[in-house]
Image (tube, rainbow, N blue to C red; front, top):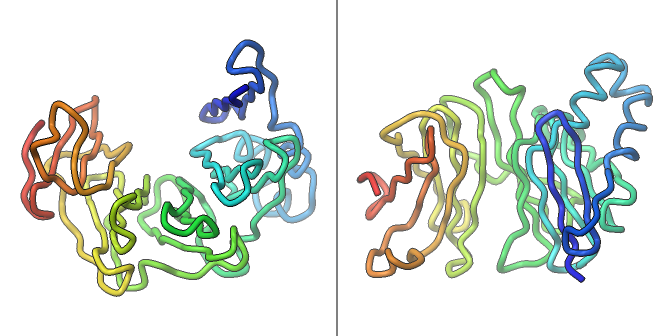
Length: 234
């Protein structure tokens, strides 16, 4: 039976192990961390609990089928038992930014993970980190990138290992075509980026087109990029 997860902003994480027939909360072990010394000292007990319930993204590990990666306001967390327990990935040891907005597995290397890290939800500083060993350790991936606002989402191409892209909230796309050696940025024609798709083609009925990226902007408008710096409304 397929296990299904549903995360809610400031509402925690739910899990179904029977294909959605029944649901249970699985953020209880996370909330227990709010009483620990470091989160409480840094945020206070109420803000720590709220931040741990603030689900931003959830990813599965292809290398370890029971492993889940959870992005929250207080960082990235890992579960090796489908959400029954969670451990912190301790991003503060390698990054000054720990507000996690997205986390992804890397399609061409099942041991690799990507994490979108920011200062807060409103401050304009971001970073993209990569781990080659399921979260230990993390290293900066977008070393020469820059952004006008926080990094919202990530995508790695399933067709091309060297291709990866991200999107910042107020309308900026950025990406690499050579595995992170060089990065390019591209202002989007609208603000409010929430999601992106990365690949070498598009699903029907757009399969005849050769766009590299698709972004969901504002109230659901899709914009496609034939070359990286040319945008049109879908």
